[in-house]
Image (cartoon, rainbow, N blue to C red):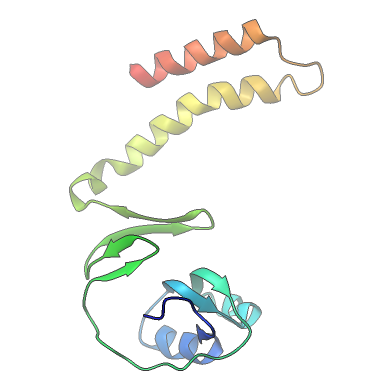
Length: 141
């Protein structure tokens, strides 16, 4: 709730408590600490920063909407989080998401493989244009 975090709420203690409560990770615009110990128990941090000191903490509210880094998250929301960030997935598209991801990977593979095969000899611009057109054809099909 602070405008700028000055200490970390999330470290070994909060992680251990929340893991015991069934949580697998936390998304916060605040600070985190104790990264090695937290990684060792398999807990995931998605945080605004790493801070060395402790924070004054107390529970304000539970099971309510929160805004983290400009994203409003409500209880029951479906999130995807990895080292690149966090996104909210609308429930209505969730059943179609895996197939959509496979499709994107398949057409992106055209560019990735086409370029990587030319690392040693170089890629001509005409070949890039051809690869791009092929990717767009697959994407639009």
